[in-house]
Length: 295
Image (cartoon, rainbow, N blue to C red; front, side, top):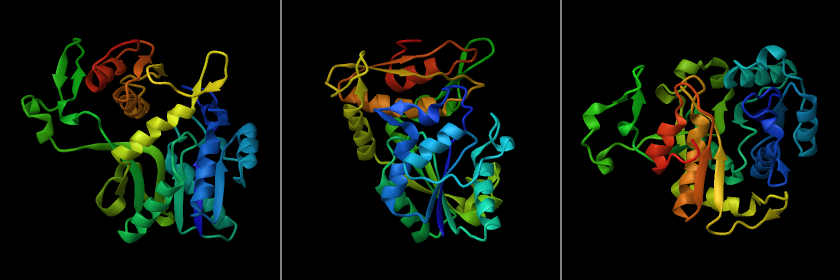
């Protein structure tokens, strides 16, 4: 049995109700459910949620909601793996034994059915325990720096201060879309061992794919009156996102990936964010895009 689990709790704090926010006239979670269905990879597609409204919307797109997620797994500190373990173990209590499981995030509107299929095929072909999407950093991480308590800057890798960027090893980050894995691997893996040994292979989101994602925004511009209209070259794109040393910056990196492609296509891109102690958005934007607009 191949199982797709879409985690979607109702208590999001940074963006309230983000899992069912309208994006291009469709609920955000709908894109993930449709991609899962179109991939034809799954015997069962479920949404793990503690929220009645999310459950009803998920069902309207064709997913099932066979249980209500326990409150203990729906708080601000619950990570993804315990949620997937819970879903697998629930099916075990029903006499069903998922062999392969895909954790598909509800907030992945650009995920493609063919990517889900290819990642599954790669996991099987390479006999790996996991396979998930990654994308390359737009700027070498070896040039990254941090701020000190004295409000000064220090490089993480000062030995690469004079190294040419083309000579630096390429690095990747999690694309935040989906994670294929063997059911037993999900049940046994701790957060600290996910990236060790043969626990993961990488299905790379290529540059051409990122261009397709950026072009997908052409059909997704909503004008001031709330009417969808075709994106025209030269219009301004604004990303509203926050990050800090305590908040994390993974969501910023994903926004920057899209922003970089838009900028290279001639769009005017700004970031709007609040100032936070230890704010990372300023550093990220200056490094990745050469701008600090909107900070």
